[in-house]
Length: 304
Image (cartoon, rainbow, N blue to C red; front, side, top):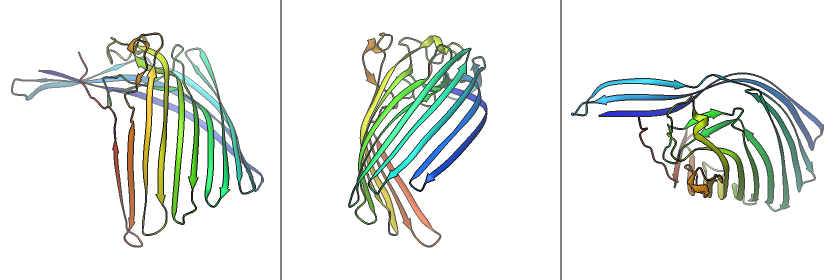
């Protein structure tokens, strides 16, 4: 019996230079700014482990084959500025802007990323915070609805594959009026563009060199609400959190799921987590974490 297992790999070598500055014109006013240059070398690969078993199930022969695409070079130049301002005891404002240029395969991508956060405190431990941010990502996680880790393939952007961009909005209520305790309820919504997925009927991991021909760009969205409780004082501390969320994808050209919206392979509708820390002495702590989550994880063997 012949058995084949596949693993997607993205080898990345890079050189970077970064500089950051802090400017404090007043005790309630902090300005941060800086820039960064990164030279990337990407090499997407698919590693196949092949084994041949006899009728008794014993392995007779095994080997590994690496299928790699040509090296891909990219240069990233970015700059940012953000301002953290506090007005009295009840209001704070944090605007910012991140600008980035990415040059790959003779094409230049320009991605402005504005962001802002506002916090209003009402006294007696109550506060409300809302935030907006736009983000860009120059590496894609390429998945298939029938596959899960470790068969995912991380691939870079190219002249044909655009960066992932996302708009994120959040709104939360926070309470810290009970000594030693913190409570919060926060909701979020995230819209994503240029997400990648294998086209229906295309062979996943048939080759790392032709991966661009087997994928399609579409849209995604993710939204949810998180309940959070934290105990900060005493010998026993810890957190309890519950998240209800949904993540899906849609490819309107009809190449995937006939153009209909479908759940993302890593959609976790429910996630409940408890972490505890018990102080046993001056130098000894005991910690434990327990998590239970719903979702759809399915691992299948890669075909020949």
